[in-house]
Length: 379
Image (cartoon, rainbow, N blue to C red; front, side, top):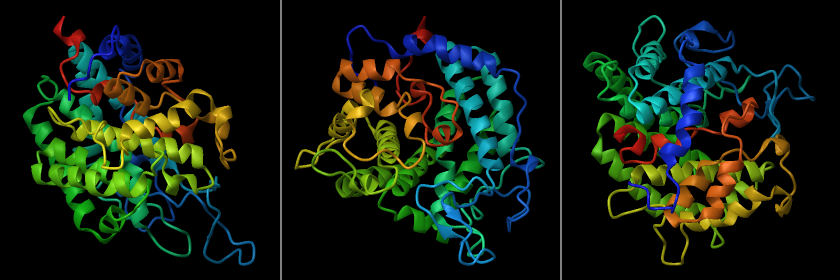
């Protein structure tokens, strides 16, 4: 979807210095995948993703029994090494792919492809295309459907793969192998018990499932799934999750309502950005009662600009670490021509260091999401 004109602003030109500097900083970074860290409590093998439920802790009344829930409170004893390796990968790969998109420099493409081969192609290092052992709860299960949210960061990887197509570095064999991995993973998401369970979630988990399904369907050329995701956005996600004022009640009901509201809006606006077609901008798609993603940005933008005005209690954790450069602001600004949203986006941190914030910041390179040839590539 070509961006509308926001007088005097060019996203590609604005982002180019930051993106190129970030790509330069990771140009020589060696790929590391999940096989370099083993969770001794996982029921899976060395190529299987492993994570443990964030908000589950030992039961004080039964210390040796199943863990119990403390919503919003992250247990520091959980296994997080695979998540950390993924965050390392996506930060590097997304920057390299975005730098290639903006410059056409094969150095960035070549470095990005090395990471793709390690994660999705090389039999000795690749990750298996499923999340069968994600978000496990000690004493209760070896994995859960809600764990599918762990790979929401791969949605931007899929956008990066699309940007690399046409480069000399992404050979037809590499492209076919990587595409095959995402085709297999999308099939697992659609047909496994965990994937089906997650697809039915009504809050940010459902939003993240649809974003992943749409991004992976786009990269593998599955038009039927793309159409299904578009229908899901229009008939389910937007009408079921958004209140008349543009808020997300299911996120506001959590112990971290600020962070969860921002996260869900970021993911849903990215989904709309991805699914929009010429003549159909889903950022401005409006339900009969007036609800739209532009209204959603309008609800949160004042509180992102001035967090002190937030009407709910502070989040249970990480209150001081939000907001960062939320993509919903730039997507909303381009769709609605709102310079105030753009100015808020410009002054926020584009590369947060806090791990939990990075984990909930899956859209880092908006140039990979705004379609059309950037001016920097045409010069």
